[in-house]
Image (tube, rainbow, N blue to C red; front, side, top):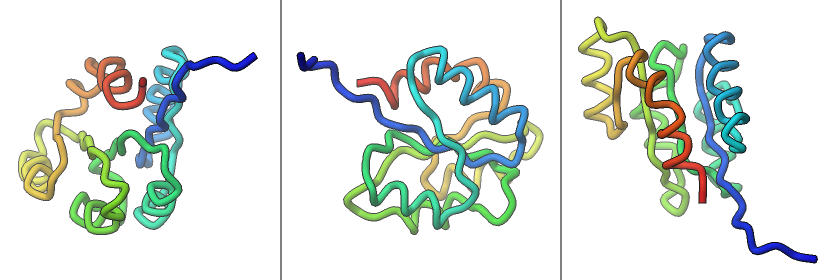
Length: 124
């Protein structure tokens, strides 16, 4: 018996914070969705090329990862929204991420909106 239930897309998370990664992946799992943790731009680009990715969640404190590099590495055929989050006091970093093409929010706002963000970008 086949079902016509659409397959959800996968979210990619780039964050060096293991506790926060667990929060994001756990929230996704509770919603019946999936977020995979990746370490760098090259891995994210490779996963995008393979398809099925709905968005990229980027912790702006991730070392050696910038929104500009991430956007530049995205294959044209697989562009997805980049949602970047960071400390509300690091206004310059948040603004530079916004100018590079990401949807940007302070970490507290990201945390509060996480279920909606995941549902909006990953559920079909």
